[in-house]
Image 1 (cartoon, rainbow, N blue to C red):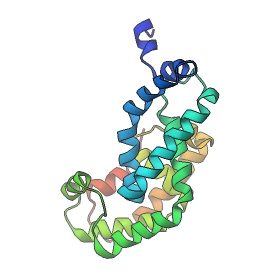
Image 2 (image 1 turned 90 degrees about the vertical axis):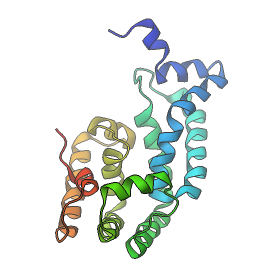
Image 3 (image 1 turned 60 degrees about the horizontal axis):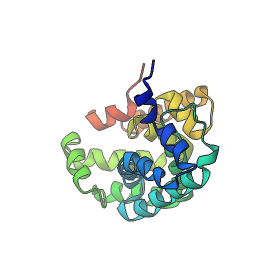
Length: 200
């Protein structure tokens, strides 16, 4: 059973408090903005991520009265908002993936690039992975990257995108199958495995 102190510390409690004390919403931003920014920057680049994350939290603040307070963790809700906003930038996202596919360099990734370099040993792998991601449908890419990069469960992705869990599974399976087919000529890397691995 969740303690009273634990309940006061939940995202839902912060959102509830913010209804009468709007400054309390800053606590939600402090908890989740960095992770939302990393996720967005990997999809759109740092420059666009700044604006999209700001839009995400502004939209969340404006809609906080609609939040279902029985959902203690607001991550699926926030990732749902940012994913819809990323969807408005889908052409920019595909252009970014195609640029990575050509150059092998992930623009604006900073320290994240170093971590990716550790997991992908050959530039060709990064290029091929970027090209394969660019070729996914936007719906399949949303599901795949929410699981792989935002570390959401299938249930959380379903909440984030407002779709049935069966649809999450089918889109994820289709995305993984397409990635595997396109990357079949390469030796597996941990990043490719991360995107294609099956979750229990």
